[in-house]
Length: 345
Image 1: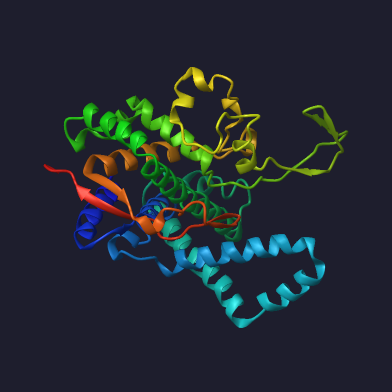
Image 2: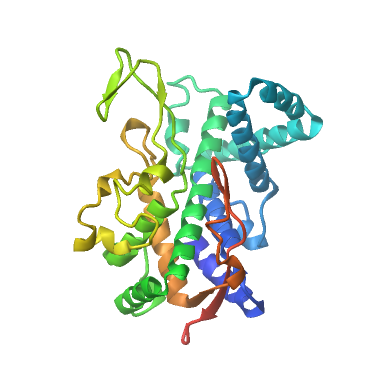
């Protein structure tokens, strides 16, 4: 709980001097947590109230990677981009990422020589010899863990917070649930938040309207092909389900562009919804292994934020979600929020 304690402490400090950019603070928190869980050390974002150079570099590389991915549809453009990405500046970003990943990984390996540390890398390190994993393999896995376990969490928290602020009555219900279920902030932990059913519904509805992995993750059709929704798809075809499109289709959800957590609480108005269509962490063997961790982090962080503060959206951010671009992930702008400490906290 240490990083969440530090988040709340920093928010109390920052709110005294004006509105706070919650997008940044959610990012600081998620990167520090996943850094500790992966490498045994945080990135120091919460301490410094800023991005570690390696973290900022990740955002740049993610954007570059998406542009390269889309360029496969335009061969002439891809040739130009490959030339541009061979520039000293582009290469330096890639070198910096690999260098800093390796440095952190080597420190984590050294840490594990003296003690068992039940974190996200422990299983891989124990199987390193058996699976003949080289340092390069571990580096790539560590990079995936960092990106998948940080940016997506911060995106979800930012989107859910924005949607709550745009729907004051829903926010009021959530505040009432959190503040009436606990006598003190110390009671809010990984176990106790599981009783907050309205909070879970708000999270699910937020993931529906603003899915962090909004594009489709590609899958290859197996040999002999497959029939999907009555349509035959040939073998070796690349298919995907575009999450944002699926979650905003009236075939699946009534009033798909409106924020209604009640649809996940048995409200008769939404009984025709196909709630099973909501799969923000995907399904099967390639589904997200961090699902449970992400849910508990979101529940605790959101609970503690609304326990400590009354929130008001800055008018300049009234179109925060609607104005965003996408580069595989949302290109989030600042989410400026007025935080008014609750009396007695």
